[in-house]
Image (cartoon, rainbow, N blue to C red; front, side):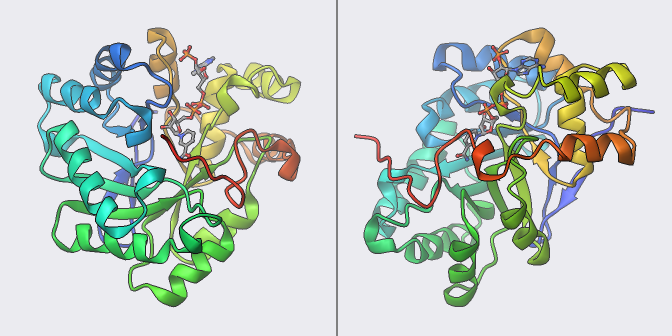
Length: 283
Ligand SMILES: NC(=O)c1ccc[n+]([C@@H]2O[C@H](COP(=O)([O-])OP(=O)(O)OC[C@H]3O[C@@H](n4cnc5c(N)ncnc54)[C@H](OP(=O)(O)O)[C@@H]3O)[C@@H](O)[C@H]2O)c1
C-alpha cells in the first residue's frame, strides 16, 4: 500500500492535503530546518499563524525547498489583536509580507473571541471574504468556532467557512462541533491531534499500536484521517517528522477505530482553552 496523501475537496472548489505539518511552539530559529525537513520528507501542507511568530521562517523554508510555490499548501491565521476590519486588512498584508508570498492557500480567524469586540466576529469574517474575493486568500475558514458561532456566520454572512480548525484527539472527540461541520460541508481540521503527546502512552492506544505493528502516534493520526479530518502534527524531531508521515500505508479496522473513539472524555478531555471563554490578546 503506497503512502499517498489524499487531497480533500473544500466547499469552494479547492483541495487541501489531508496531512500537513504544524509549527506551533517551534522557535523561529528552528523553523526553517524543521519545515525544510518536512518538505524533504514529502509534506506539502504547512500550518502556521501570526501568533506563532514564525511565518517569515515558514516562507523562507518553502522558498529554499526547491519546490514551486503552487506545490505547497500554506495556512496562516489572524492574530487575536486584529479582529476589527481595518486591523484585519493590515494584519493580512503583514502575513503575506512575512511569508513573502502574494497569496495564501488558507487564512483563518484564529479564535472567535466572543467576549471581546462586542461579540462581533461577523465583520471580521466579512473582511476575510474580501481577501478571498481579491484572490489573495484562495480559501478562508475559522478556528475554534463553536456551534453557535458557526450558526451566526450562517445567518449573517455569505461564505460558508471552508474549514473549522478545532481541538480534537482521542481524549476530546469534540463531536458536537464535528457534527455541525460535517452537516454543513465544512472540513474539520484536528489541532493537537496527539494531544501534544499525552495520548501516546494510553494503554488502549499502545495496545492497538502493538496489534497493527505501528507506533502510538501513527495509530492516533491514522484514526483521525479515517474519520475524515485533516491533521498537522508538530515535531522538531527528525525521526518523528518522518514517522508521522507514514500513516497512509496501513488501516485500522472498525474494532480498533471504536476502541480509540471510546477514549473520549468529553469536555473533561479538552487540553487547550475553551473557545467560549478564551480572550487572550497579545500585547
Ligand atoms: N488553531 C489553534 O488554536 C491551534 C492550537 C494548537 C495547535 N494548532 C495547530 O496544530 C498543530 C499540532 O498541534 P500541537 O503542536 O499543539 O500538538 P501535537 O501535534 O498534538 O503534538 C506535538 C507534540 O508531540 C510531540 N510529538 C510529535 N510527534 C511525535 C511522535 N511521533 N512521537 C512522540 N511524540 C511526538 C512533539 O515533540 P517534539 O517536537 O519535541 O518532537 C510535541 O511535543 C500545531 O503545530 C498548530 O499548527 C492550532
